[in-house]
Amino acid sequence: MKRTGAVIFHPPSGPSSLEALVASARAHAAMDLIEAVRPLVSAVVVVGDPAVFSPLNASGIDITAMCPEDPFHFGHTLQAIVKAHRLDAALYFGSGSGALLEDEDLSDLVAFAQRRDPAALLNNFYSCDFAVFSDAAVLTRQPLPANDNGIGFHLADAGVRCFGLPRSVKTQFDLDTPTDAMLLQASERGGRRLRAFLERQTFGHSPLRGVLDALTRREALIYLVGRVSPVTWQAFETQVACRTAGIVEGRGMKAYARHRPLVVPSLFENEGWDRFFAALQAAADAAIIDSRPLLAPEGNMPSPAERFASDGYQLSALEDPRWRDFTEQAAACSIPVLLGGHSLVSGGLYLLAEICWKGRNLPRRLHPAPYEGDGKPHESVP
Image 1 (cartoon, rainbow, N blue to C red):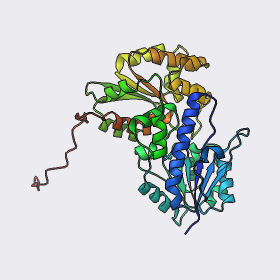
Image 2: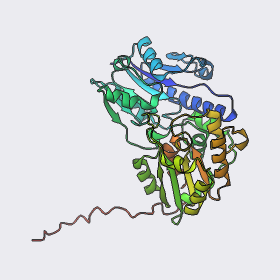
Image 3: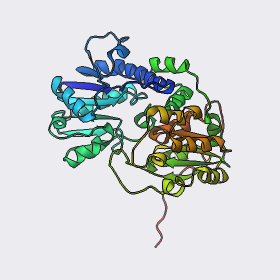
Image 4: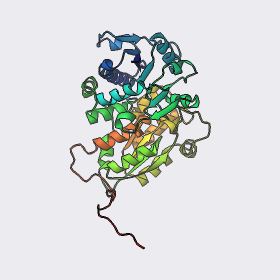
């Protein structure tokens, strides 16, 4: 049996209230995950603030402090852990990922780790949040990226066989922004610690109710903008009653650096975002927007405090003029506009398609069921 470790990275919280909320939610999700995975693996290593995870008080868990004053490097840290704990295979999780995985799913991940051949299994090859590595030594023999998003590309380029998990709410949802926490609260899903924490939280201005209502109306049109996978979009459209339209922008912006300008920012950023939202409210009944590729198309993000304030429509907390103008225009829009990051238009879409039907007994699909034949033999035509 291979020595298999589960490695969970939990970043420190920033100073703003929304940053603290997200960090606390991620910590509770990580503790749920630790309790679930601990019986299945040889070691559990948490990279983060030891004080945050003190409620566990469990042997067999190694909590390594993350030095906030040093530039954090995902690849270097993962390599150091693999060497220090002499891991033969490893499961990696960002603390906001895997929050909806069930015991059977975790057992399947551990089973993949026992493969004889060097291979990687990723929740999303194009933007990784959690992964399994059947040969941890491979991780130590080559450069790894500074963040986890692009590890699939790096390993594939190095000749490692990479597999992707089927896209679903369990594999694609990542708790990364206040909007993600709000969706989880509305869904009443997650582990016991996470659910208890979210039940105690209140969120300010939110267009969520208006968006959910539009998802159940056949005559409505929802506009999607951002890093939307075609596979996710297709699944989302089959589970909601409304029609959908939108623009896919910025896929792979973190995993693979790119320098070509994106279409939407090129059209609207220099002239202000009022024209964008005027066109949006004229065309749609609600919008779900991944704002990051629109406002930071080259990946140069402002602080999490700035991004989260935009997601939560905290206009007074916004200092960056681009993000403030964008958020003001979204707030003034006559249709509900839900703002967030990549998870909103990946796992968030699966979750929205579930939440919108809570308490409703309505026909779900706009499209007819596919015809699979009547089961009767048919004569061939000569």
